[in-house]
Length: 225
Ligand SMILES: [Zn+2]
Image (cartoon, rainbow, N blue to C red; front, side, top):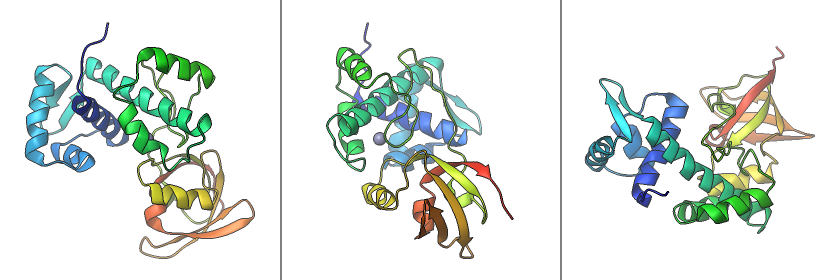
């Protein structure tokens, strides 16, 4: 049984889910910024989604997805991330190119094709950027994207969990430096006032712009002062 749901609604649910997961509070302006739309457009759509019982308002807080809204969001995210991995692993498309394609295919791919992709890939748990793939029954496991490489301190050793998938130029740059999920990074030095970060990856040292470091989410492994 498939309820028809428009690509636009799917994009909203996905954006709200990600904001919820990252920062808890989801305001109209945060959604507008994420989707590149005006506040007025977003306000109108929020009313529509509330009528459909996909989200609800919480006074002075913003919106939160209902269980139904969350399940729909997780379905789109599952399609997106499985498609990305399929394009990358099976078709050999570079990790900086798969996101744009998945943004389109996530709205049209059938459950049957998706199941086969899942099977061919061996029921994977993460996509090429390290993001967790929701299960078929709508569960999602894994870390929260709370600590970025930009938030680390000199002497920290961290391991990369995931990287933001939207900026192709940054993804190509990260690939050149070997900054992939699972790789460990040692923070050697930082320039003051939120400037560049000097890191060691394997046997090489790099100077990383903070704008790139902000897009890399990590877990702390050890501290050395
Ligand atoms: Zn993506």
